[in-house]
Length: 291
Length: 270
Image (cartoon, rainbow over all chains, first blue to last red; front, side):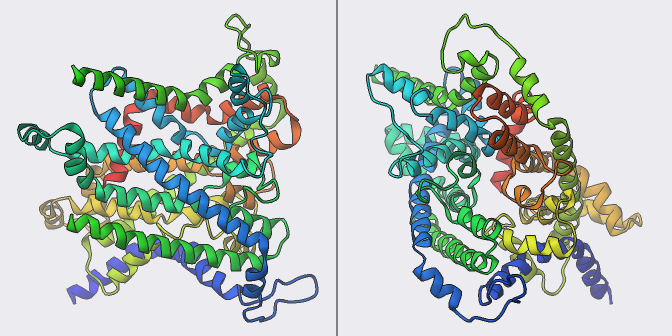
């Protein structure tokens, strides 16, 4: 009798949150899959069941393959570089350092700025000829470069912005973890005569593994979620050389209004995210425990 | 000897990186406070001006955009606090069938975020006739898996004896929550609040999709419309507008730097 009342109270407390959670996360995730098997309704023609037609189209869509490869490169570079930088920043800021307050603020500042706004500043940096980067290059007598107009350079240019935006954010998590490491470990290590590098490799780094797992899962998600700067800097161009999956989904759904194909692309994104997150979890999780 | 050399090297490295990281901001401030002619010419004696800010402010309805953003952020924050508190309390202190499955479904949102489900959520908003309202921008984010998780972890650290003492005095579940748990979780609320406000102040893609008028657009979308259409390439005005939109957050960050960093740390530890 008492247990029954506890059940009801528990469920009642959960209801408001669960309604919204199901309405805007679980329900759309399911309908995305469902709609990927239908055609896009156009004018008089209603949506009809087309089986795997959208997926056939996907496999033959060269833009999709390019965007997918862009996004994988984007993730492959952004994730390790921003995590390595974050760890380095955290070690610096955690140690004895002159002007630590300013350095920490400088690292962290990009995190609080809107990506869409800082993209404007970076756009200016990259301007051929009189942008800051070309001006500095000019001092060394180097030629102008069209950073965002050249298909070979544009992806790298937007990757730099993503790293700049994210490293400071990840630094915070490492900083928190570093401050939780007992100082007696360092004393013990120095009595044993361990150098700083050995100490880092044998003590600090393994102890930071859970943080690395947390940060890298976040980094994976962000590398598919953060596309704001693409809108300002390149709009996916030139020739889709800097288009990312979520940006392509946006274009397909809200500029070409092909919602069924956009749903199909979203399914790909969801599958990709799940595989990466789960895989990463097992990969890193094992090292967390056994080393 | 090598040790002090090592230290010096590290200090230099840390500072160089810090300056590189800060450069875009310094550059933006330089451009925004000088006349257009000095946007790409670095002359320490260049005259200072606030004209760029005035021009940007007058060129687009930024006051309205700010109002929209403030309303949006407030709406989301209050909604998240209320709903996540209730749900977190249930997960932390109640036993009921389906609890672990439901909790897994909540955590799933950390992976499958509303940010990605833009196509279907737009359909839902159209069906609810909410397109182009501030509610539509905020609703998908209110039941936050992250918030529920964070508060649940905090509530679990509250000693059960405190709850039992309150129950003996005849307090109901909501009174206990309000009088015992919420006050003890204040630092978590502050941390989560700062993270949430800065996240939604900066959010762009979903608001871009679901709004299409001046009355609902938040500053981020307003800024993108402004810099895409009106200005051509008048960089001074665009950077002024850029600084303006990030201004309140940036000033708050500079003033409460310690709390900001600690809040993000606290939010991440769990």
